[in-house]
Image (tube, rainbow, N blue to C red; front, side):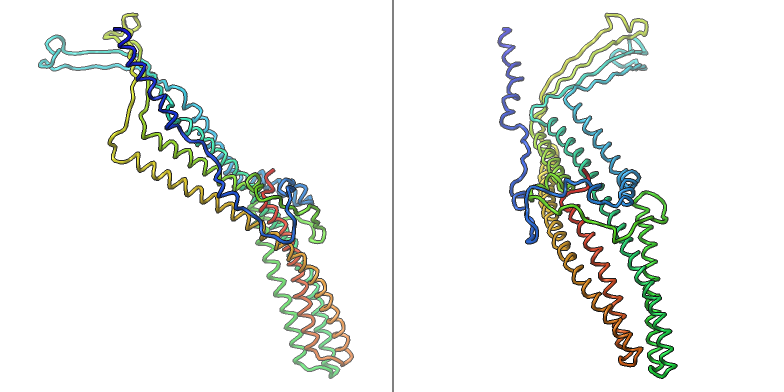
Length: 466
């Protein structure tokens, strides 16, 4: 008789465990079709396993003043501090996921007072009923289908995603600080050149006025030279205004009120790091945004596991025990003890299609996360290629602009000498001066673009956060 009772109980406990092999949660595997297609488009630099992503920003940016601003930004920037709070929030969820395997326990203390109707079942025996109870309730769910494990892995992926997002914010911050700093240096150089041009054109105006008095040029030449002088002054005003705006922007990145930014000069900047990009698959290890996108995919994958497990029955065990008495004085007697143990399977049957909807939504979100992961890799590959081409173009342009400026500068000197001897037209002098100024400003832009391309490449290969 006892054996016949034991068999059904064993069967009740074992069957769900046997079904685990068929319906257990799946393990995440990186989708090959997403990763294998990643590639860099470049014909200028060779690809090998070495990458500048592993170089510390302190080695890449040798300017000690810039290094100080980067350190200040990493410590005080608001976005960085917000990202750290998100990490702390995600870490709390990870701790919650780890506790998912443990039973829940809650205690309660109750006092119940009832006024009974005389016509009720016990109303003819007593009119009032007082009951005192101190109890604890223990509940535990067996992780048959891997739902708790999947939830835990989803929380872990979310936490790692927040860590990667913090690294991405850090990388972007370093790049933005370096870019603004280099822009300020280039603007300083343009201001210096424009100030020299203003003085030069003032001297040219005085020379032209003297030539007019000597009868060598007309009043038109004087007014044309005067207009050029005013044009240079207007350019100087715009440049100084841009400097103030750049300083304000950089101050905000440093987490402080707008103010002056101390800096060195453009000519002291050096590029001592080899611009090696590594192999494409290294983007998965170095690019924080790519890492974050993959962890988002892992999170969606695990949540799909959770949604799938909701189709299957849940095995729960609950126990309630404590002390119960009609009188407070006898509440803690041994005769007041009570206990209840319940175990069972709960299988959803009809629930308004909520489980099916949740599963279909999780599948769609998983596919969306997969596409975002793919897009992150494509974007990263494009940014590497863009930065490589831009750096090469800027380097070539610097050489050409140097030659162009030398030619215009020489032409300006020759035409000015010829004008003073009456052998050249004043328009030739004006054109040569205008072209020389434009070429010199373009040369500075090319030098800035080279530095900017280096920063962009550093970020594109995943550098800055190490």
